[in-house]
Image (cartoon, rainbow, N blue to C red):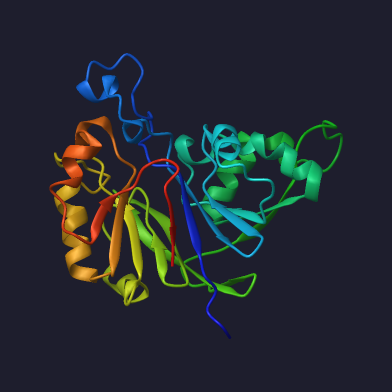
Length: 260
């Protein structure tokens, strides 16, 4: 692998599928004046040198790219096919005009969902002139990717009963919508500098880790630092929850940038 690349991780969005605040919500978090309590749908960007790779492309993708001033991307990796993770794919058009077909990486099931939802992106004949194009690569948890000389491990995790993919870039792992991790996949999560994982709320949820489960995962894997994302307003105010966390565990927020 040569010299270790310095990775920069930008939290493009840290909210759950409804975003925070949720439309018409009466939860007190809705009325918070703390900008950390305003959360777009979950997505991160891994960057090094001049390379930017985005994980997931949800309905807030355009806003996220503008807010973080992302002039170019090298590709998009998908975790799963739920709307809050794929509903912004049409917004890649400016990057397509710039670079041609945008590389995307997903498992076969997710690719089929993208092809069904965005058939006009994948057609090869009579394509609408301004429609974007993509260059798909099918991956699974058995693969090892080399992206611009950075080693990327897809990791199978369970979103309730649905198998989805997390990713380890170097010594940073990103697991969203995770409820549990198969034992045979946990070896990919050893010796992490940073673990990013889900902490949806305090009460138990059937497809996402709650705060207690997220903290238990941190205790088990022992990363140097951990950041919680995919947060709902039911978790509470950012400032209050951070006071409850161990010293090496943090709540992520939109726009946060960390390095490893």
